[in-house]
Image (tube, rainbow, N blue to C red):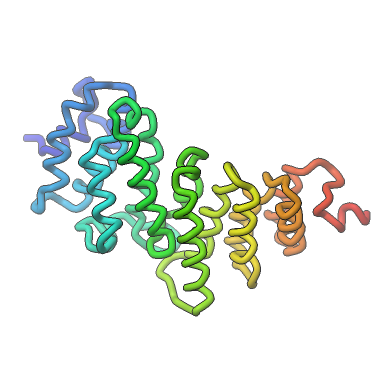
Length: 268
């Protein structure tokens, strides 16, 4: 006898066994996903269900732009983000930190088209804003900067500035974190290059101004290399001067030979 989870997320829309993520991705284009929404909503709310099954039910509901999914994420993020029954069920490979909010952010970003069809775009935006507000408190497993497209960044811009500045203040105060907050905030600030290079550089500069980790420098290289404003070129020069081979490779690949931020290249 199959379980509710197996029927809802372990079975494809053709009736064959399937991976849960294949079911979720398939739902983007198959209206039959709507038939599974009541069951997934019930599974999400079932205190007796396994934590991982409830999380995957939520990922599906958010991916399919359902109000029940968006509202559940906003509630969790706005109260105690660690009080969810699935917190710690899925962890990242770097710090063994919870990554559920990264999964949910990725799902919310991918729900854009369905949100437009279902009239839930405002709820989607509220969900993304609630998630961004957690960036200095919870790890997103390197998903935060990568999954926010230009529209999402634009919708969340005031909150991005707030959380980056707040996180930087906490770092400067010597607080200890259970994940790599420095790199995560660099990723978030770097995503701003898609819509406002000046603001992105304004946020990145203090983050990278005080002995940044090699990981933070490497994550900054791509976004900074895209900047064409003068402040961005200056920041690129500082990254180049770090001497990190990967950083130089990324910056050099994006810049024509003789780029103005590479003094050692010009001198040669």
